[in-house]
Length: 254
Image 1 (tube, helix red, strand yellow):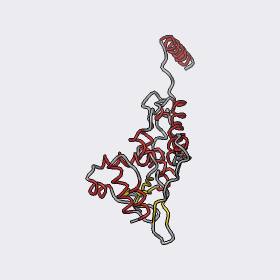
Image 2 (spheres, rainbow, N blue to C red):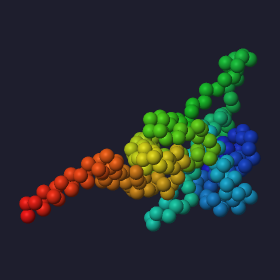
Image 3 (cartoon, one colour):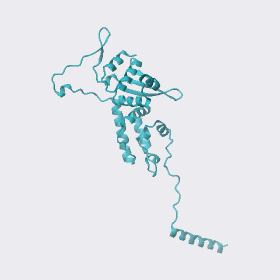
């Protein structure tokens, strides 16, 4: 347990009891760097919430930059519990400080010089993860518009967690851009072959992203060797007349 992180979470104003409870559990399991990896079953047992509800709360916490999630796999490739980082620096509370005696205390907020809104306004920096997620979302829509693929209207809570996981998996924004560019170049994914068209959810689905990276979709929509177009009535008559003349000529020369 990290006393520093637990103290920070306890002081943090959170409107949702479910989110606060999850933060307290993460802090209880956290090491000095704020890292923990409780399983979904553990979280469900401790909170009496369903896995679906837990996922919704975690997506909200990620969206506000209070936690960061990293997907993990064991040596055989099987997915295991995620690694959760508590982001103390993004929590809107006074910084945690240690006194000369080594005790942890919360520093008092600086008093305002007046009663104006400007005096009480706090400029909280946007977490890097939120910025990367927004840029990834905008890049997809930019490429989708050019390829005729459906544009995503909003990221939404249901997509936030999957976008974070996908960015972690691909090594960040540049990996995402490379994957998007690859998908947009495949006719069978963009509907350029007159068929099905993908959406942003295609790329946010782990199994489908795996297929994209492994080249499963590379041949989708690419035409086979073009066959000669069928002849119309006039062309057919001309062909048959010339074929008849050719055969008569071969018979006369025999």
